[in-house]
Length: 117
Image 1 (spheres, rainbow, N blue to C red):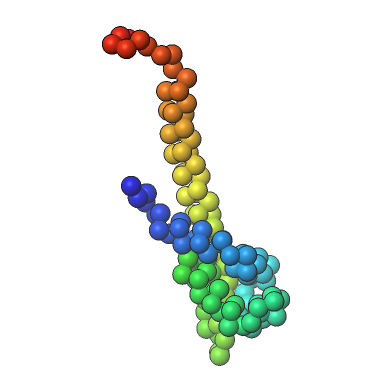
Image 2 (image 1 turned 90 degrees about the vertical axis):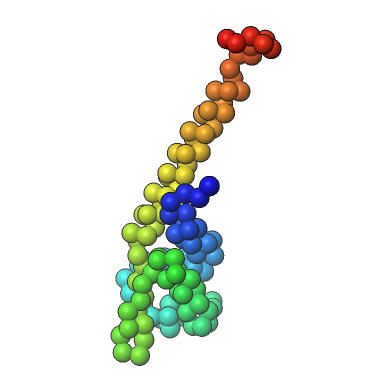
């Protein structure tokens, strides 16, 4: 059974699973906007690798880019992180509810076979 917004949350989680992408988000959060070239200077990866990581982050809605002359300036979209956090909170609440039912069933006193009570 699929939950609403599952694919969007999945995309965010996949994007955040990679340490370099998390570093890029941190850099963008600190700097506001930056080009791939500028970001690559702060990381031990090439500009081309940074562009690939930014493409994944953009696909997940975690960054957005705008053309400025010959460059693209990227900025973080913290609202997408907030949406993902809400999605995880909702998922956790659903599992807590399921686990409470399982716990109640496991701790319920046993009734003899055939006893309807």
